[in-house]
Length: 521
Image (cartoon, rainbow, N blue to C red):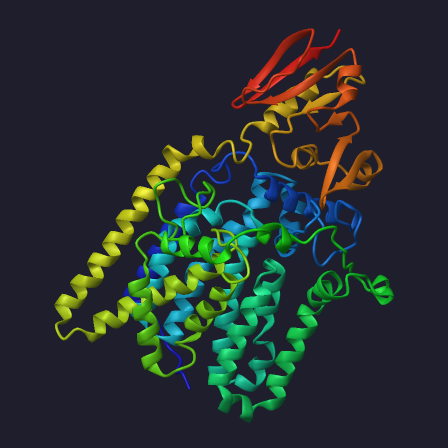
């Protein structure tokens, strides 16, 4: 049984300082860095708004367990968690990004608590400090990609699991030990591969506790199945039956049948082994600017040697809780055999690597006969991590905003506003199709009623993607004939985009966006 602990005063000060640093790195210029909105976070935010407006997603599904979104689906947990904030502050970048940044900051003390309880105090401080300044975690906390909240819920899940089984009130807590791991399935669907590995390995190593508490353990499994049941039903409908059973319509939630499989889209014709070997050996660099700025590694100075030491020292403790992060890492590695890795899809790998690095550094210190040398080694490692984090954050706040502006459509809200102000009665408005899911950004910034969208939009399924031709007088295709048939139209153009017009009137410019009136005749 793990004993209760108290935190020494110096450690409390150190933890407070670490959390303060983490908050500064994640809240500096929030929510305007990165500027604009990525189409995924605009979609997640609009789904929250749609649910608040009339209890359906944008396609009319009441309280879905998974959003059809653009066709192949989008995870729901972030949108449901964001609803209170959107209700309070309206549909804005601030309200949409609030949940990720709060969970990002909250992950620091949560990792500290887990390592403090399962390993020791110095390791907990090292782990919290590393997570606070890790480039990937800083950037992922600052924008609302729905899959980015998965690491928090997996961390909450393993912490709750280990705490429940080692508590003096285990028989009362064990029935609730799998709640966060069930919620993780709704954060990002790939958790369905990770969670069973974590739970299976942990319960195997805790078999004596399982045998002594068959009823609480059975209740925990039942609770997990009840909480995860709607999503498991969604998987059954879309991946096994390929049809919707009649009883589903009587449920208080909807189980959408997707028009395409996301997994098929991302794995079709790709060499998983080659791609993921390159991804892992290359330090998890995926080339996407929203993961980390060019020239930086997502995990900074954290590497496999120290994490491998962590696996070794955790195994030497012979306690299942100290090995929870190893179990988590094993479960996350399974993902690399199912899909090509990038900073979004493989984010379940990162916190266990950070935690195991902390265990490795702490174990390295304790294994040295000379404590002074051990302290020096730890100080050098942490100083290197802090220096790397400082260089990353300087680049992220100076050079990077301009580089990332295109990916997030920075300035589009201003361009759309200018187009609306300039538009004459019944004049069409063209929205550049150089912006992915351009209709989604329009719905977000206009705060469009989802019922009105469905009633006045033309769309169809094109190769598993919902292709929206127009919503009212807004048109989203470059080759739209209705635009040329009108005497004139307003166009929101991106970059060097041009339109063939008899005459062009420049109306406004917002960074990468140009607003013009195209007179066709």
